[in-house]
Amino acid sequence: MGGAAALGAALAVALAVALAVVSAPPASADSAPAGTIGSFPTWSIGTSGAPGETFQGAANFSPAAGFPATTWVTNSVTTRVPTGDSAFLGSSTGFGQTFGSSRAQPYLYLSPAASSAPSTTTITFAGNPPAGWGFAVGDIDADFVQIIPRDAGNAVLPASALGAQDTGGTPLLNYCNNTPKPSSCGAGPFTDAPQWFPTGTTVGSTNYPTPLVLGNVADTSGAYDWFLPSSAVRSLTFIYHVQSGFPIMQLWLAALATASTISGSVEQADGAPIPAGTDVDLEHSDGSPVADIQGDPVVVPVPPSGDFSVQAEEATYDLAFTVPPGDDPIPTEVVAATTPTVTLAPVDLVAGPVLAATGVDAGPPLALGVLGILAGLVLLATRRRGALGRTR
Image (cartoon, rainbow, N blue to C red):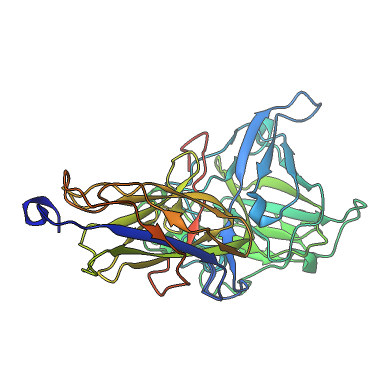
């Protein structure tokens, strides 16, 4: 259909969309509960006027993550929020298997304090984080970081509250082994991985009695460690030390958001197959694309059957339709996927041709009912975030 071949054809298309959360695989393949999807925060950053602090900001999750208000302060002299385009924890890393790839998701970039002294960064949660949240520290090679968890009363919690993962280094704790490889990784080999010391260790001539992630002194690429902490953790303090050179540390936060599966169908009045080139684009309410776990826009090709499906965290989205050249556009649908199960009211399409050849009268409007949940392509989507820099 479309172009000259469609001239003279009187076709109409009905669109009905139903929403539901189903037990489809979430962004995490291993440990995330069904009906959830990995969610990453936006990071705000500003200078701090408090004594001994250089920067402060917030990490804001989407409402679907149910994460408490989160603030941070640091005396790191170089603090940025890179985009996550060139340095990220890919879907094959342990962290990525749980929350989805962090590609195109911002993170916090931290350096030592002035004169290469250890920097201190504290992240504080206004309430108890939900079960299943996590964080990761990256580029730990020519440096090391102490990690101190505290409860609501500011008492230090045991190292077990941090929920250290992959402590044996399997899979190897190096995100440069992911495909696609982050562009910040260089040529390799990517065999470096940090060491985890839950009760501390001696570095040089100094004993550090707190939990510690220790790099192997040489400046390499991709070494990281990750954690699934207890919900009792109300703050995290990162004390970041130089071992050699001028290292930096990367810090990611992630949570599990409740998810909705948006399923629907595109139909033609005469029952003909839907032509190739018909796609559904998942967009935020401002028209910006929603990104999948690889950081690419979520674009669902509509098969000849017309059935499609896409999973995303609960929010309000636009469904924008792409049709083949020569076919009339399908109006954008606003989808309020804000509860575990949502059913849209019947949809009346506008008068005139829809997915019919341009200029062909398709007759009066069609009153369309809501279809049930339909089998189709399922994509795992996370929200694309803004960012303030592009430094690895």
